[in-house]
Figure 1 (tube, rainbow, N blue to C red):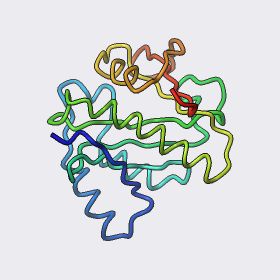
Figure 2: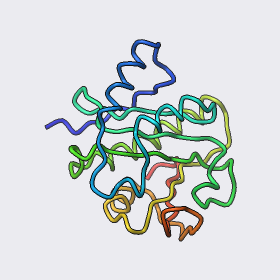
Figure 3: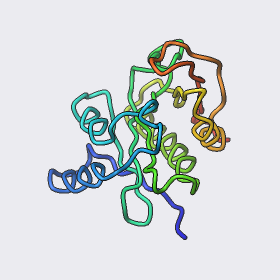
Length: 174
């Protein structure tokens, strides 16, 4: 079974290819109770395309969409980070409920850090890594992020869905 994941940048696709990918995103499903932690996948992808600071990605495995995520510059404080510019914000991260439990979240989170590192190098921006916040009531998410090399940097209580853990992973090799 292939467990490789690829991040497909929606910004880098032509209109036809983007429409195909967005159609696949529309078919992604949330698991029971996940609506507390993450929004509608298609709406998240479209919001990512509408705002210049966001970079929305489709997560693919074995040639099909299995999830979505967005990297955002200048928004790290939304995850409880002390400043906006030193980290990319990983947000809107979702693995389709039918694909959960296969380790794809861990692989996609690590791929997101690699993608953010390439963006930082290409554009010569100041980010040193990727930050996110994950709800304390989401043990699967906490585990996946830890396994992807993210470190717990404390509690954040500013989110609407309850207490969160601030997680960070540097671009430096693990």
